[in-house]
Length: 410
Image 1 (cartoon, one colour):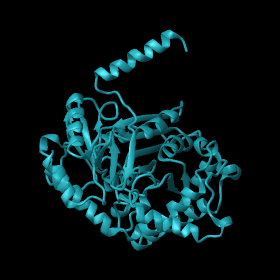
Image 2 (image 1 turned 60 degrees about the vertical axis):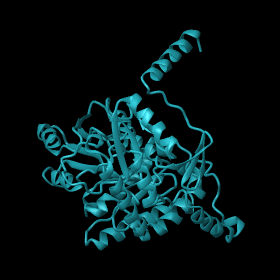
Image 3 (image 1 turned 135 degrees about the vertical axis):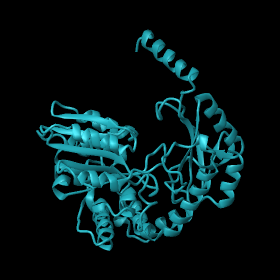
């Protein structure tokens, strides 16, 4: 690398420092609900471990004890060593996909819905979102993608990779379904397919999409398909933890239901619930799936272990909702996400405390850390300009007393 490039890189890094947008990987140790950062023991309120399963040492011991009872030859391998289309597929991932299909089927049966889905597992939510849309739009069909303005960066990257002469996209104002409806109306007759893309719970604002409104829009135009990313809803919403689509009885109306295991599941990986023919198309065409080494079977075994417990974690889900509502209502209105709802209702465990200014947000995070909370500043470009915030994230391992203590420092 030339001196010119090194100097330019350093200048750009210095500019990030001046703008209070410089990022560093923290040096952390994890101890249950706490992290050790710079020698200080801090209560973790920054993780996506919504149900507290990732910090549950007893749960991990239970899983490991199950493994110890297996014959050595039956213990799941520590590496897949290959992509799934070579030798990276095994009984663990195959069983996981089958059990996820049963999870879905049991939910729709309870709601007297007529629907069935096949499941395909991926290495991560990022792999899923950068691979699914480009693969779906690889057919010679004129397609319009309409995405919520605040969808995750992985979805935006997937949309960018989808652009061809036959594929265009627009981003509608966040949760503004009148704006979305106008874009649909403006789509001329040459558009053969419209894919609406949204998250069920948005990762930075913590608010919900109105899945029922999206389903109503879909019913008005036969060209519309729904792609819903449930990453932050899986495990915490629905009677069995299947997400906002389960809670709103819209499971049967969503064409591409994407979820992850790296948050409430306390594991790693992602999945799509879709038609069998779509699954087979993804297997044959999706580059992040075809050209990536599969996750280790031991990870899939852990995910299966958690999945078996997921429908029975309603007590944790209720406790989480109570904590999240307590924190949300304690934040002054001027620091909240603007909402058309006058009532403060439970949206999600993600509670943004919006300060706007980067430097002020960094300083507030330091104050909270000094008070014993591992809280982090979220700044542009992760969030829009002038909306820097502390992303307070509740989890079921916290107590009401923890939250009262946090409120005192807000």
